[in-house]
Length: 417
Image (tube, rainbow, N blue to C red; front, top):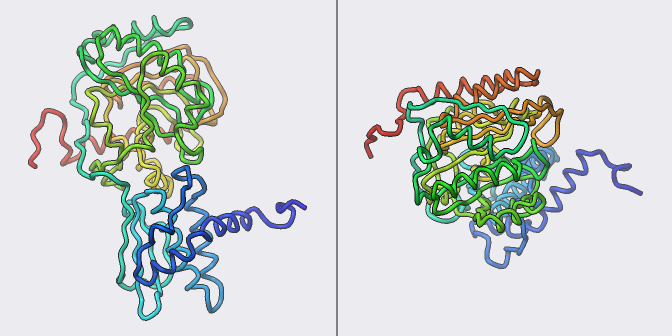
């Protein structure tokens, strides 16, 4: 007999979360008594977020807290067990526990946002921290310099190499963007392994790498962190043909979920710091390779949402908790590309980001100004009747207000340290 014929879907989710957390039951007990988890409590699980969904844990804690007599103690233990699981995965989290003589409350935070809580609100007596690892420091963001906001446009139905070359000529040539000897990080859109326009095409990657070689770039790397629900980025990219392509074109692959992480301060409304890969600082230039598509939650996925691919998996949980539109705007301030190219030869006009209704504008857009490109991209999708553009327009207005707001330093301005 299949379990689905006996239990509801929500019950199965709670059972699954309980089974995953059960292995941390004893370590959580030691933690609640003031002793951090010991080495023997660790396991050799492979993926950094293979079976963890915070929403399911939250649901489980909520249900446990309703059980008469033992409910609060059970919920508190589940919060601590959740911390043990997150700590093992290396997520940046903090557990506050308190109460005497018996622990009566626990609170779990991810990057400062409370995601799980049980019991009362008394001041915590014990605080444990699971760090993302490596040094943590401020990373200066790449602010728009208020300079060239030209958006190049090319209509193409054939070889993308010619289209990309013409785009760059309209912007003054690749040498104006990438000087000889520069190291370049390409940030494509491989949120999933689905075929274009869900993801960046290998043809586009080849065309851009050819231009960079001609400009004399000393190092070219491709970096990505795919959707957390799909597991490791290494495994996602393995289904796209990117590793084989990278070897053939001498391009280094940087899997962000396997890198060290740093904090990057941003003047956001909901995020005041974004946790990004430390390796971002290694490169002289950053180039975005965008797909044109609608997004069933975020309205659109063009340039502003691209920075989510730099974002630490734990912080992405916060991203989807509330105020998604404004949080995307906050996130886009953490990393600023030196050039962004939007492939709209084919696009999604509904659905997305992985599957949707496809249209074929046959257009390429490029700019050094991410917001200007975003506006042109929204206009192009509007021409083809795309759904959800009002959400994308809200994101654009939000980020423009943040960039132009008081206290934001642009490139070339001096900032007091």
